[in-house]
Image 1 (cartoon, one colour):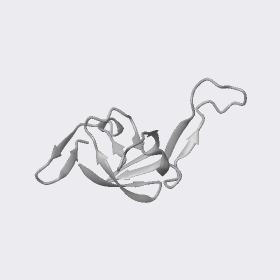
Image 2 (cartoon, rainbow, N blue to C red):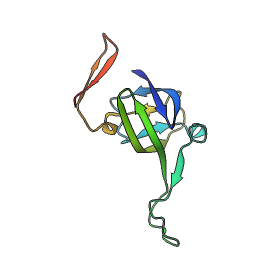
Image 3 (spheres, one colour):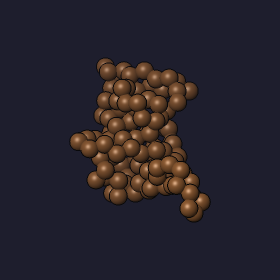
Image 4 (cartoon, one colour):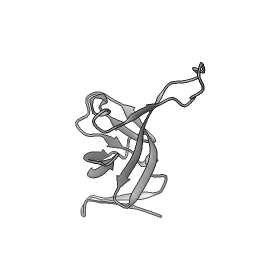
Amino acid sequence: MLIQIDVNGKTVKAIFDTGCAADGIVYHPSEFKNLGLQVKNPFPQEGVSQGPDRIIAEKIVIGPITKMQVRAYPAAGLSYPLIGPKMFDRPYTVDQKDQLIRFDY
């Protein structure tokens, strides 16, 4: 289902993909700079190299849901970003007839 989201204050269309296993948002790498996605090292101490850098969206807004510090994953070949259900941490149903995603609170 194609949905409208705000990533760091920029409105974009994304696909709500029920099969997307990522706990954040999946983007084509060419869009990272345009959306202000920042690379953050999870180990900020100088000289410590115990893991990869993380790419973070400071703020994502999807309808009434706001998520802060959302992990972003690169994936080539995407026309739209992907958002999976793991990002929301709550049950949901997809209503194809009314073209809605209903989240249980």
